[in-house]
Length: 348
Image (cartoon, rainbow, N blue to C red):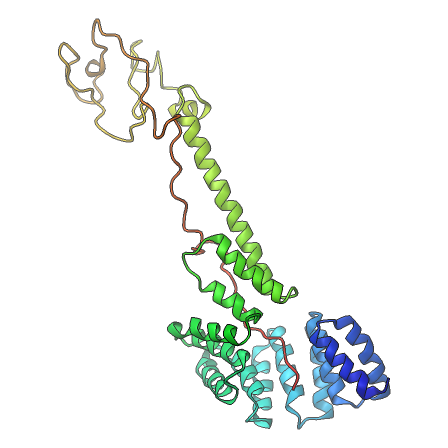
C-alpha cells in the first residue's frame, strides 16, 4: 500500500474512532514522508481522540511549522490549547486560522468555541458563530456554536432552539445532546439520565456526558436514601413504644416524670397532633383550667378511666405518608451538570 492510500486509510480509521490502528499506520507514513503536514494533522486528531492533548499540540505545531499558510494546523493547535486550558493562546491560534481562511466555516466555529470561554470576547464569539452559520447553514456544528455563544452572551431565549436545530441536522451530535439535556428543568432524574445516556451512545468516549450521567446516579441514590429515611422515621413514630417513638418522646415521657407527682402527663403530639393548646379542654366534673405549667390543670378526671387507645397517625397502619420529594430535575444543590463546549475536529 502506497503512502497516499495509507494516509487516506488512516483518516478513515479516525472517522471510525479506531485511533490505535490509525496511529500505527501513520507511523509508517511519517517514517517515509516526515514533511507531510497533512499526516501530522491527522496524527493530531489521533492524539485528540486518545485524550492526549499535549501530544496533539506537538503534532499540530509540526504541521504549522511545515505549512504555516494552511489553516488546519493552526485550528488543531487551537483545539489542543483549549484542551490544555490555555485559552488566550487558543484564541490567538483560532484567530490566525480565520485570517488564513476567512470564508471557511470551520475556522469561525473554532474561534467562536474558544472565544466564548473568555468573558471579554463573548460578543466576538457570537458574531463568529453567526458567520459560521451563514457560511454553512446546514452544519450542525455551526448551530451548536450559536447555542453555546448565545448562552455566553445572555441570549438565553435562543439557546435551546439553536441546540435543537443542531440535533435536527445531526440527531447524534453528542455535545448538543448533552447541553440540551442540561436545559431541561423540572424533569425527572430518569429523563435527564436518558438524555446523557443517549449522548454517550453517540460517542462512548465523551467525558462530559459521562460525568453528568454519574452525577444523575448520585442524585438518584440520595433521593432514594432521603425517602427511605423519612418513611422509616414516620413508620416507627406511628406505633406506640416503637423505636422511633421512644427516641422522639425522650426520657421525660410516661409515669414518674419530673414534676408529675406520679401522675401521667399528656405528651404533646403523642396522639399525632403537631400543635394545639397544651391545656386540656374543660369537661363536666373535669379538671379546672389553668396555665400550661400548672400541674392541677392536667390532673386526671376522678372516676374516669383514660383511654389507652391512640388516634391513628396519618394513613392506615400508623405510617405517615412521605412528603413529596424535591423535584428531581432541580439541581440547584451540589455539583451542577457540565455543559460541553468541545467538538470533535473535522477534516478540512
